[in-house]
Every structure is written in structure tokens, then in C-alpha cells.
Image (cartoon, rainbow, N blue to C red):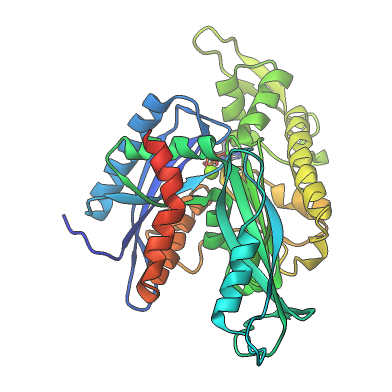
Amino acid sequence: MLRTSSVIVGLEIGTSKICAIVGEVNENEELNITGIGQSRSRGVRKGEIVDSGRVEEDIRVAIDEAEKMSDVEIRSVYLGVTGSHISCLTNRGVHPVASVDREIMSEDVEDAIKNAKAVRLPADNEILHATRQHFVVDGQEGVIDPVGRLGSRVEVDMHVIHGNLNRLQNPIRAVKNLQLEVEAVAFSGLASALSVLSPEQRKMGALVIDLGGGVTNFIVYGSGAIKHAGVLAVGGDHVSNDLAYGLKTPLQRAEQLKVDYGCAVVSESTKGQTVTIAAELGVPAKTINLQHLHHIMSSRVEEMFQLIEQDIAATGLLNYLGAGVVLCGGGSRTPRIQEVAERIFGLPVSLGRADSISGIKSALDEPEFATAIGLVRFGSFQEKRKAVSPGFTQTLKQALGGLLRRAML
Ligand SMILES: Nc1ncnc2c1ncn2[C@@H]1O[C@H](COP(=O)(O)OP(=O)(O)OP(=O)(O)O)[C@@H](O)[C@H]1O
Ligand SMILES: [Mg+2]
């Protein structure tokens, strides 16, 4: 088996499926997907592990499949993490310029960044991502690079995504138990955005919503930087649960009905239409009214979008989403879901595709793979940073060290 340093693997331990994607970065920094491995997921609820044994078995299946397809031996992964414990804040770091001539040096900028990272998080929480938004020099907002300017005060706004340390450790531990290294962890919603948003969309401002099975991850970009992120502990599974309850049918059947006949909008054209499901294994045949089915689905989908809309409206960011809303994740396959999102957000809505990445088309076209593909992209950025700044590997290892060390206990 081949192993080159440019091979990067993204792993998503999702609620519905576990997915490993292998990518290779060429000398022009173009990403090519060369392998994909997938398995059912039996030990995850709402994006978090509840049965480690089963999860480890399922990860192994996905990794083995990805190895076979890409013909590489997988030794390490970039791992996606999610869960309702993940949230975010923006913190401003301030630093008085020390030099007599008031020229801002890179050390001043680093100190401002260090101060911005010294944020008070809820007890037991750890920083997952701390990203720079913009600098302020002597009150002037929106400075891109303060080094070399004159000023007496440098400030920087950092966006911090954080989560509960113990809950972040569980997926790391599961991977390490399989003798695989974790190169770095990334919030799954951030990874999805890296796969479906172009740099232009990130600059214009966009909201990415990844509708998964157990959770809905969302993230807002503006001026090229992360502005907001969150996790709704509700996903496609809850739509199926509602259908099972409302249609008085077993969950598995409700899931099938959702995929085969689902729609996020109740339309006049389906009035009076029914579908009959044949009897099977002790479950009698049943006739379902399509409008009833669509009504149950639309209520839940609307509620999910409303919760996200309220969260983002509270940050004042809704008016800065020039590139609109981009949907991905398995739930984005729901027919007419775009229309519902357009109505609730009052913005143009599109379905995300990993357009900037080449390789196995069947992987790139599936909205479920946005997170795992984005993790490969995230990995490629990390590898590049390692290459240009030798100290970065150390910083990364230190940042991850806390998470990994505790995960080994
Ligand atoms: N055609 C479809 N219509 C509606 N929902 C669908 C369709 N196809 C798949 N889904 C739903 O998509 C969800 C799975 O999506 P995905 O694979 O992105 O989740 P996941 O990544 O495993 O979970 P999570 O990210 O929440 O941990 C399931 O709830 C499934 O029912
Ligand atoms: Mg997912």
C-alpha cells in the first residue's frame, strides 16, 4: 500500500452513518478525493457516542473500506465533533503598543491574540477553534494587518468555538482505541462549510446548515471569518419520530415513508392522495394520507429553521448574509426544503455541493458527505500551516494535547 505525506483522511462519526474520506493534495494545493468508506452507525445519539464498542466496530468498517478504495494505509484522521454542548462566543483582546516610536510589531499582534484567547469559558469547557475576525487599531475597525502601522492600542476580535471537554474526548478515545492517530479535531459544522462554501461566499457572508440525523449544525461566515456557530440537538431522526407518532406506525416504517414520500411543504396537489404500505412481519398494512405526512414533516422542519433563525437574528448577523443560506447533510434531500428555508430566513437558499474539490463524483454529489469532505479540506489547511510555520505542529499538538492526553486516561 502507498503512503504519501499528502494523504489526508476526514472521519465523521455521525448519528446515521460513519464516513471516512481519503483525499490527496497535489503541489498546486488542489484536493482530490480518492477513497470513501461508509458504515451504518449504531452507537451514536444526537451526534455523540452512547455505545463505544459498537462505534469502534463501525469506524473500523468505514476505515477498512476507505483504505481498500484509496489503496492507502490509514494511520491518522482529522476528526469531526458535534453535540449540543458546543457553542461559541466572540472575545476582544487588547494590547498597548510598547515601542517608543509606536510602530506595531508582530509581537504586539501576537500578544493581542493571546489576550483574546484568554477567555473565561464555562467550567469543564475547552476551546475547539479560536479564529481571528479583524483587528482594531486606536479605535479604527476592520484593520486586516496591523503590523508596520503606527498606533498605541491593538485590539483583535477572536471567535471561539468551545465544548465540554469530557464529551469532546469520547470520539477521540474511540479513534485512538483503534490504533489510529487523531491529527486534529474540528467542529463538524465548520468542516461542512469548508466543503460547500467558496472563499467568495465566505467573504460575502453565508449561513451553512448541515441537517444530519441526530443534530443540525450551523455556522455563519462573514468577511471571510467565522462569525457564529451552533448545534441544534434535533435532526432528521426527530422528523421520523414525529411521523412514527403522528401516523401511528413503527419508526423504521416512518423513516422509509419520509424518504420515499416526504416533502417539506403541504401542497394542494396532494389533497386526498394516499399511499398504502403493505403488511410485513406482524405490522398490518396501512394507508397514509399524504397531506397528513407532509404536514407533520413541514411543522418539524419549519420549527428547526425557526430556532436557527432566532439564534442568528439575536446576533444581528442576518442582514450580512450576502451569499444567503446553504443547506447540506442528509436532511437537505427533503423535497422542497429550500422553499421553507427561504421563507423563514428571507434569503436565497441553495443546496451545497463540494464544487472546488475533484475526485470520486459519487462522494462529492452526496450532501451527507459534506462534513467528512470538509474535514479533508480542514486537514489540508492544517498541513499547509505546518509546512510554512514549523512551530505550528507544536502549537497544534499542544492544543490537542490536553484533549488527547485526557482521552487516554
Ligand atoms: N431523501 C431524504 N429525505 C429526507 N430525509 C432524508 C433523505 N435521505 C436521508 N435523509 C435523512 O438524513 C439524515 C442523515 O443525514 P446525515 O447522513 O447527514 O446524518 P449524520 O451525519 O449521520 O448525523 P449527524 O450529523 O446528525 O450526527 C437521516 O435522518 C435521514 O433520514
Ligand atoms: Mg453529520
